Length: 587
Image (tube, rainbow, N blue to C red; front, side, top):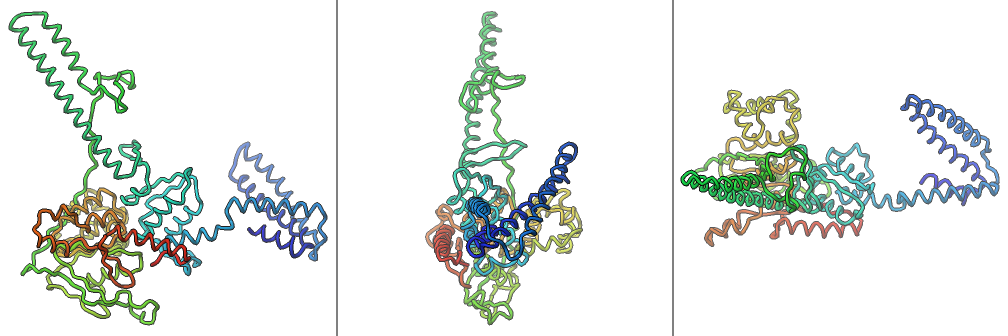
């Protein structure tokens, strides 16, 4: 782009400087060539190194000649001869071809569109990268990868640092803007995201890759169907073996009683048939099995049908909430709560939270959805008591109502313990309950921090393990209310599934902030089957208390009767409007 600008100015405005311009461009290109050749000369050795150093001498001489040619042109310039005019047009043509290849005319617009979709407002797109936090730098790296339009795009946990609107935008971008010859490989624990973007699942287990067409839900269904099919095959083989074995036993009984030696041939024939029934006679592709199909020595004349061991399930042991006297219906309530950050009265946009009222019951399952920065975590801080409202009140049923608060701040805080182990951290946090190491290790082991992991320094634990430690501390003592802010970050699918089961069976109130659509649906959206056994009055009460999804926008709560699906549709519609207007997706 710099060469194009220089050539156009020389040709259109300053023709006497055209010769000097051409010589300058030749010199600049020789500098680039010289730098590349110097790297080769340093890196290569032996025969190739000798050739590289010989070529370096040639390039150095050419660079000096180009510099001398540039210096020889007077500052005032000269009239360009016809040869220089022809050379200038040829250079301009080659520059235009390169600009078309890199799509230079639309490069900035594409970059800004990607950044808008990932949540960058027009005002902060031009800020220095050093001013952004780690999560926003991850978004910048993702935008870089998408901007390149690569043939092969590798995305390793791309949704970890994205809010739900950005995740929705990303999955729609991958579906609508990639060409058929582009390949995307995704590692993710976000089930909804995988279902939306994947056409094939590659499974890695026991050092082996297996390939399954379809998305993640289809993969799970096929694995379940395959397991059932193997059970049916084994049951059928077992029945056939039993029948043949009964026939052999009957023939042997007859032969022993009658002394008829001819029965031995029948028994031998049946025994051969029994040997063939030791394995299945069909391959996975449906062809008849032959020993010559499979390399190696075979003890059986068929394929042994073994059901694959299922993935180990994860159990999250949430303790029962302590009972409260009087069995209160309302545990905690926000009454017309408004919150502004200290010193932000004059800040544009007003309070973060405005006149919000919310009640938590024993069976409440509430989800708060919205982009980062909309006030979800502030609401959680108000519910937990860590923040005091500017106006309005936060009321608990009694001082005995205990709240377990899980936040990314609590997980990040564990990074500060470079030498302290999870066991020691638990003993220091609850010295009365865990006076001995075995007691602390037993409790941590129930959350998957077992064996040597419990006594290693906290800095050596993975993100998922630190989240488990923080969760173990959060639920300790049987709280009646669980506030879970982005708990699924860094957790694998098995742990998320175990957490869903635990929360659905939890006897207290749960408030979630999450960008995992599957997790929110599974925990907070009430199934009709769950209410089918209840009488009409109980159904109305449970529907009112449980399974509520709110959108946090403009400092207020907006109830979504359609749950997560309604939120997704709204966000997609607003994204399109924001992109058309150039304002980006709404915050």
